[in-house]
Amino acid sequence: MLFNKIVVRFQDGSILKGKMLDFSPDKSFFHLELTSGEVVTVDMEKLKIVEIDMEELKAAFFVKDFKGNKNHNDIYNDVISGSGKKVRVEFLDGEVIIGYALSYTPDRHGFFITPADLQSNNERIFVIKSATKKVTFIS
Image (tube, rainbow, N blue to C red):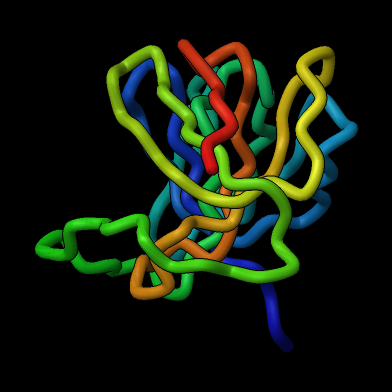
């Protein structure tokens, strides 16, 4: 069975990895089944499936694999036709990601981008607007 591998990065800097069970950009939460061996302790209970509050997130990264490549430096020069307008996202923590957004509406709590680096481990990113400092369309 195929599933989306997802790495969620919280605004406090913490990270969880797993497979999403019921993610929707219109919902305020979703459930994440943690990767094998990983558990989270909540109220003295060890959990393998956790509820993720979207507003606590920086972003949800849909990844090719969980290991990634720490030596890869993203170079956002790829042109991805049919993926929308090119956008520069600056997060509150200073990280900058450049990608393509099919739909960005400032009054929604988040939006998807496709990174403009096809060699990146990230396939798509759901950006939480409250975790951004600035979102700029570029040509």
